[in-house]
Image 1 (cartoon, rainbow, N blue to C red):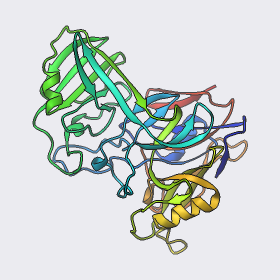
Image 2 (image 1 turned 60 degrees about the vertical axis):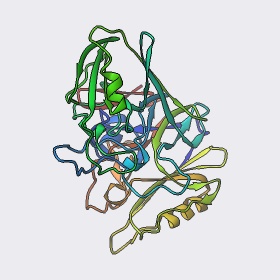
Image 3 (image 1 turned 30 degrees about the vertical axis):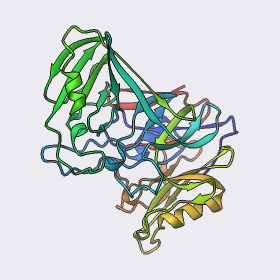
Image 4 (image 1 turned 90 degrees about the horizontal axis):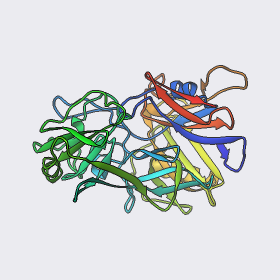
Length: 357
């Protein structure tokens, strides 16, 4: 798909489940939000090697919805998917800025927890993994899945054991309501933020006491003010392919932007079948270059690769490719194309995200 971002008739946004720690098929998300087309998005926490810790289903990279941070990126060593090219960052995203242009850029979460004269650096937002020694924030958008996964692994080794030095602080309407050694689970009410710390971050959180007033603030620091963004692995920069993994051909999904950011390209390549073996990442980068992309990212592939479109007048979208698993896989997010005026915002309530005029 070639999306002309100059057109006032279309816009691009994030396809997503009702909460971060959940999965839906691309068709389900597109139909619920009123998209006319879409593809699957970022890699996600699909499997676990830590005893007693369930996969969260949350994506690896950052997400921006309506110009606001929804979640941050996990440490590079905690990502799922192919290895990052030399010099690339797991904080990379593709999206559309306030200037209505497409961009591939890096988004770094910058935040702080303040209580009186004390301040604690905030290193995570609704993420399935936070940095060693760090503190992450979770809110109602995370969902009911346990937050325990956030303190497992290290910045370089995803399978490393879970930390034994942890703390969790519940902040309700700006006041500490509870401090615990254990990392919990369950839905977080609106107006409540749960702070999770490990190692030095846990030590800092334990200094808070019930009744303390706390202010949690955060933003994404970067060169682009995104209205929508989703994480991806860079494979093309300034028209030049990056040094990507040499592993064999496979089903792929990718997104790219033209020089100047006026066009967004969405590509799905079938594979693992008699009709198509798929592409290597190097071949995928070359394909995006041929289409006119100047910068591009690799998105989740394999059985996740899905392209949907909705015919004029149809009530629902149709899957246009042949998913490698034989049917659609539930994924963490996606990129949706919308008809301007049909959907202006997305509201998530009662387990469903829907677009609103």
